[in-house]
Image 1 (cartoon, rainbow, N blue to C red):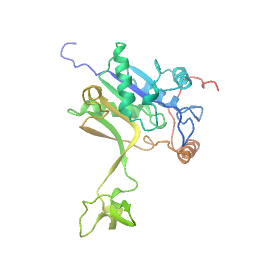
Image 2: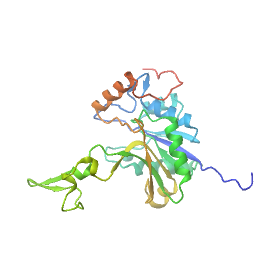
Image 3: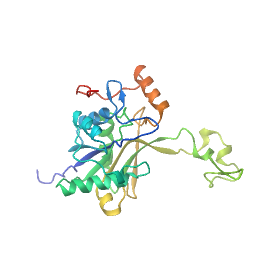
Image 4: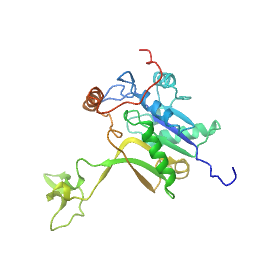
Length: 254
């Protein structure tokens, strides 16, 4: 109808680089009943936020798994943007430009990492609604309160220590205070990021300069980075403390 504003189009980008070292094949390793990437694909689809759910990978095997669970994997990520030190902007820029060449453009993109398996469709919808309701921002990023406060962190050089955060009151520095008296500090987690696509094309950035927070709840921001995290995820599932998104497809053939 005339006068109604158009809802921006969005694409879900799920990075699934092969060759992880701390947890071998962590993006497709089976957690519960399915490869862990299946839960992020399922949550993205169920959220109904995205016009397309795309997996960015350098592996034909990973691409086949992604397609089995209903995501698109129309092309592989080239080796030069798939290494350990490759920043996110490289594969995001490659992907959005490749899609643009094929006639597909989106107002926004969201990075959903497979290693956050407890992120639900409702999590994504909540973030999307908050992002759309905030004017003047370039991006949204998931954060949670720091468990270890940077006010109590140090840099060590030649057997001498200097506070990581130097701007603490000299009369009672943060490193000598109780945690409860310190200012709240938040750290980003791997749950999700949302940004306008223009920040990639105009400033070669995935976040721009004006970021808004998305406060994750419970285990929405839980991230699997090492074997201890993997074991913790299994324990959370077995004890019912955390729940995986529902996956409607059959398990990918071994």
